[in-house]
Length: 406
Image (cartoon, rainbow, N blue to C red; front, side, top):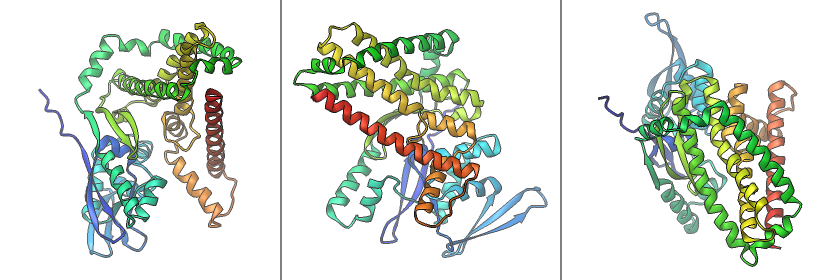
C-alpha cells in the first residue's frame, strides 16, 4: 500500500511596518489562489551567474546584501525568483513554469520559498485593496481589529486531502457521462431552450418580480444561499474532470477567499501534467453547472403562474446562475477565474493581468510611453474590456435589484 504523502504547506515570511517579521503557514491549495510572494527590493540582493562543467548546467548564486547569506539557484529557480514581484500569484507562477519548461514539479515552488524565507529574501504582502489599507493603518485600533478578524477568517478551513477515492467512485458510478458527446449536446440544447425561455421572461420582468410581494429582499437572499450550493457542485465537476483525465484531485474543502469571501474549492493542480485539452475541459466543465441550472430555473419560471412567488424565485435563480456562468467564462473582468486561465493558457501569457495592470499604471503615472506592439495592445485591450465589463456588471445588478424591489 502506497503511503499517502503528508499535506504540503508553505511557510512565508511576513514583514510588518516596524520591520519585524513573522512566519505564517498557508495551506497549499489556498496558497495557489491567494499568495503573491515578493522578493527583496533592488539593492537588497545580488545575483551572479556560473556554469557547472560537471553537470553541464547553468546556475546562479543569490546573495542577501544585508545578511551576507548566499543561495545557489538552478535556472528554473531563478526563473521563478524573477516572477516573485509581489503581484504574480503562485498559480500564475505554476502556469508560467509549465509553459516555459513543459512540465511541473510540485515541490520546486514550496522548496524555493522555504529557501528564500530562511535567507530573508522573500516577504508576503496583502493583495486586496482592503487588506493593504488595513496594513497601512494597523496602528489604529479599528483597522487592527478588522485585520485581525480577516486573518481569523483566513484560518477557517474545512477540507479533506483524501478525496481522490471519492471522485474516482463518483466517476465510475456515472460521473464519466458528464464528459461524453451526448452530454455536451444535451447541455447545449438545454442552454438554447433556457435562453428562449429567458428572453420571453424578460418581457414580463416587472410582473414576474411582483411575485416576491413585500419580501423581495428576503427572496433574493434565499436565492443567493441556494446559489452557494451550486458553487460546491461546480467544484465537484472540476474534480471529476481531473479524475477523468487520469490525474489526482488533491484536496476539496471550504474556506474564506482573501479573508472574507466564503467559497468552496478543489485542488486540481495535478491537471498541469495532462494535455492542454484536458486543462481546458477541466476549467470549462465546472462552469457548465451554472448553464444547466440556470436553464432549468428559466424553464420552471416559464411554466409557473405569472406573478407567483415560484416564478419570481425561479427567474431570479436563473439570472444569478447565468451571471455566474458569464463571470466564470469571461476572461476580461480583473478576476482570475476559469475563463481567464483558459485564455492565458491558449495565448501563452500566464501573467496577463499583472502585466496589463502594471503597464496601465506606468502609463497613467508617466513612467512609460504608449507603444502599439502586439503585447502592449493586448494589455490595453484587457484593461479596457475589464473596466467596461465591471461597470456593465454593476449597472445590470443595480437595475435588477431596483426592478425586483420596485
